Length: 506
Image (tube, rainbow, N blue to C red; front, side, top):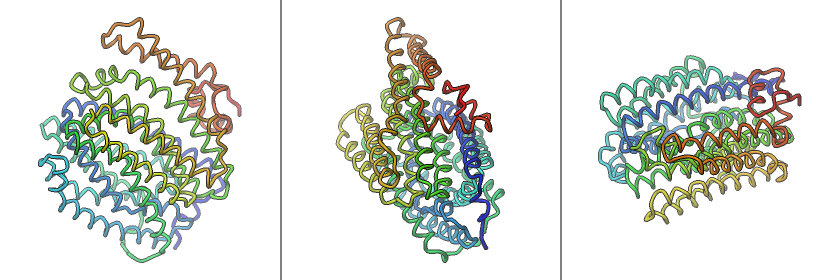
């Protein structure tokens, strides 16, 4: 029988997409805040070496989960009419692949530990292989919720699972001196709760099968190839950092990277899920997709680029205030990663549109080229200080966005002039914030609070300028979208006020 055939395509898709996006932003924002606060406490309790060990485990878990899922989650979202047999097929392949991958991780644990020159990682790799099952299985129910744009319950499940897994379990175990095991066990609890919550909401088939629509498998394989390159871009640097600079350096690298990424990763991930689901339903409406894409580019640049430019400039003060003096060596790394974050966001919202247009090959080519740049850069700079080598990351992500944009323009009529207009407002605000931060340094001492003054000065100037010239620098697509939705959504009205557009009518 058909599954969700009527609910997935409705006349009010635009309204449901906006509602889903706002719920994703609300849930993603809550998780980002919780993740940041919990990570700060755990980092102060555990130190760089423990976080380096946990980061090594996450590198392996990430690749294991991708192979176990093999793109079936995206295939379930993208398929126009979903049958019960499609879910059974996805479940069967996920179970088979998860078994293979988990066995491979457990068997290769000694070799993997050698790559990081830390034998204490062997039992951690072996134990975490089990988590591949939980991740891959929970992704099926989560994908079905995304297909239906049921982001409210999905975000509640994911936020609750994180708070219990890391905010309670990992905290208690870290206090009891269990080191990296506290983080691994907390991750396991989070994955188990996500799986249980998803199954409670989505009563999908639990009867596995390896037979079914071959198009589902074909689409999944294409998504897998793209996701593998995305994983490599996100994680190969960590593998190389651990291999060339050691586990403690990996801990500094991972914490600085996560500090810059966590405020936006959930929000970008939320947009990716909604954009992919929505664009898959309106594949023939090029103009509508283009307007939505340009609106999101404008919003991301206005919100992210000024903030992270100022954070990059004041990285020393940010690290010392949040993590303390023991993490001071992470400041040069944060400076590089803060610049990377808005560029990462631009690329992250471009890729799903290529996938929704079944142009995974174009995305794969662009991603693979940047992966080569990233790997060659780190290998070439392995004798240099990590603080210098880290600047290859923003360079690689900038190239990634440019290549993805060119690939998207080959399947959608997006004028470069419109892209520049969408990006201009954020660039202007970032320049103003940096000038304010630099100017304030002439009037402050070198104390911690004195170093924070440039940070506050830059942020204040950005907010004031945003409200003063918002209508002039905001992209026309974003202005139109907010104006059309302002009357029906309180959250949109709040966004308008934040952007200096309280009386926007469209």
